[in-house]
Each structure stands twice: as structure tokens, then as C-alpha cells.
Image 1: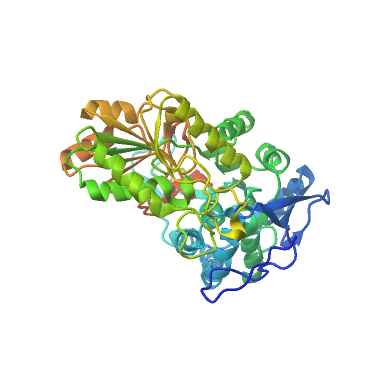
Image 2: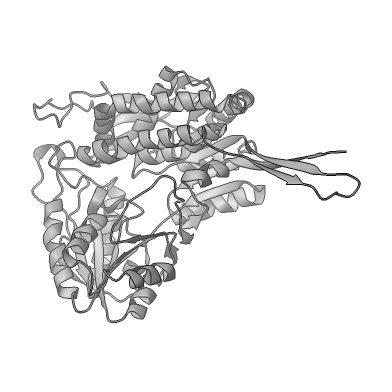
Length: 508
């Protein structure tokens, strides 16, 4: 069942990219090894529904070996000069750049995203993550406090604060932006001086495996970066519950985040949980409507809607509502699903058959609730032969839903967007805040006072004004309410993996 394709002059297909049924191995203590059980999980190419690789089915024994390796490597790595840690991370970023086309092809095959998205967003951002944290640690500062007032039993004193690495970090990343989000976690942990036991999603583990090989090539010491593959219950939970893993960084669904918190909380582990989103996109009557429509369409359907930041709830002022609905429905047709390996394709395949079935149930529910489907709402019927059996779904626009229905309240994580009118600013804010989630939000208006006023009133960790998914890596990233706890990005990420330690020297 090898995954083989004809290499086309256009450069969008590949020829047996990994060879016959590539096996995705664990990286433990600097070596690529199969799982202790000897069992394997088929890795399915979303665009064809066929197995293209096998994944090591790891378990607690594999995790124990990885944690032992990470623990043994920690003392040396945590005392490795920042300049050397930076050098290795920069070398790894350079390798990603050098292998961008190959990694993009692997990502498109393994995850279903378009190769254009992979080569312009997913893979370059992975390298950027590594570079950011590699250089951030060269410019970090510690604080010194001088006290001239005598303390009890002493004279003047000086206290200095150091941020010291916490130990082994457990990093669990999701399937939707595989290499991008994998590096988003391991880069700050490694830069801060922690060693890592990481688990990518079993649905899209291939580029994490490739990154592990590159880490060996550039000279990361054995045990510093360990990568475990397998199911969450077998390989993820042993990382969460291991007593020698004091820090857990997780991105994924809110239900899984709650489970992690229930296990790690009583163990007093530090947790960063980046969870689900049901993000509102507000378009006021004084907005640049054409720009808002273009941006809202992109926010709804980029990467098949499989981004936690996607704007899945659009609220448009009643005076422009019909224009917004018509405009987004028309533009949705430019996201026609197709072969992810074709550079012209703007929408690839959904991650799995189960995920597509979930989206179909949601759209069916919306229809049953009286929602009007303006476009999409079904599987495409004109796919190329190679991907005819893949997990595709048409971009879908729905109106006519009430705000408290499940379709409006729960994360869909697919190419489905609802559009609802509002009459007043207060109503728009109430609708936007009317879910349990609070990750991201978008406000489109040309009134600068309204822009800041509304953004300040939205219950979201991220607010964009007249734009979407514009990211400065120095800024904190994360949500409120059921969208998670903690922040990633910038100095927040480095601080997460360290402890602040105060040392006071008294002068006689």
C-alpha cells in the first residue's frame, strides 16, 4: 500500500516520497526506535483515505524510557550556555528552511492541508518559531534589587532573581498545524533549558518525526528532545501523569484539556492549556465592507476551517447583512476542495472520516433548526480521480440560527460559518460574548473609538481590529473561559518553562 504518485512538471505531486510504507519511529535518547509493544497504527492520507505510513503505537514503557532519557540529559542541557542552545535551535531552523519543499509535501500528504499553505505558512512558521526563541534567550534579562534600609539583623542587601529551567517538559501538540504548533511548544522549552518529551497527534505525526531526524543531524545531545508517537490514552496520558514531568503544554480540544487538568492538577504540575474557540467576527455598518468580506471568508475557510483562530461566527450589522452574506457565499466558491498536492488548490481535505462525519451532523442539525444554507452543505462531487475517496467537504455558509443553539455554541473546526445580523453595538457585544469560549475575536469598523471600545469589552484573549491572524511572536497567545489557561508566545512562553528564584546577599 505504498503512497506513490507521478512527479509532475508543475511540481505538485511526489514520487514515493517516503518509500514503501514509511514507519514513523519514536525519538528516544537520540535514537529512532519502534514502540516497545512492536505494534503499529496506520497513518491515513486524508486526501485519499488510504494508509501511507505506519506509526509506532507507543505506551507507558516508551514514555518511561523517554522521561528517563530527558531527566538524565537535563543537568547538562540546563547548564549549557544560552549561546550554544541558541546555536542548535538556529541550525534546526536552517534545516527546516533547506527542506521546506519536502516538509511541505509531507505535511500536505499527512494532514490534508494544501501544499501552498504548508510551504507558505506551516513550515516557514515552524522555522520562525525556532529562530524567535533561539534569539530571545540571548537578550533575556534578570533583575537585581538593592536595599539600603537595614533588614532585621543585617545591613544593606542585594537580591537577584534568576529564571531557572523547571525540568522535563511534556509537550502535546494537535493535528491541524502539525509542525507549526509542534515547534511552538518545543522551541521555548528547549531554549529555556528544559529537556522535552513531546507527543504529536497520531493523526498527523510525520513532520514531527522528520524534525526529530533533523535534530539528530544538527547535533542536539541525546535525551534533550524526545518524541513519542501513538494514541492519547496510551502515550499522551503517561506523559501527563508522570511524576518526573513538572510542566505540561497542551493544545487541543476543551474536553481533553479538562481531562489533563484533572490528572495534572492534583499533582501540582504547571499547565498551559490552549483549547477550543468559537470566535466572533463583528462587521459594523461603518466598516470597509469589501475588505471585511474578504477577510471573513479567509478567516472562515483557511486550512479547511481547521484553525482554532477561525472566525466561525460572523455578526454583521443589519444594514449590510445581505451584502455580507452574498459576498461571503460568492467568495466561498473560490475555496473549492481539491487535491492538496495541486498548487492551485485553496482547500484541502479534512483530517479524518470521523471529523467529516461530525461536520455533516452539525450542518444537518443547522438545517433541522431552520438554518438556511447559502452554499456548500455537502461533499464535493467533482474531485480529481486520485482524491475521489478523500475526506472533503464544501465550504458552507449558514444563516437563520438562534444564538443559543448548539451550532452557534460549540466549536465546529471545519469549513462552516454562520452569519447573523445585529442592530446595535450592545447587541453585537452580547452575541460575541455569548459562548463558553474566549480565544480570539475580530472587529471591523472605521470608527477608531468604537474599535477600541468594542475590543476591550470582548471576552477573548486576542482581539484583531480590521485584520485576522496577524501575529507578532513577541505577544502572548491564549484564551479566556473554556478556551484555556496560561499563555504561549514571547517572554510568557519562556517564563512558563522556568522558575523564578530569588537569592539575597546581605552586606555587613
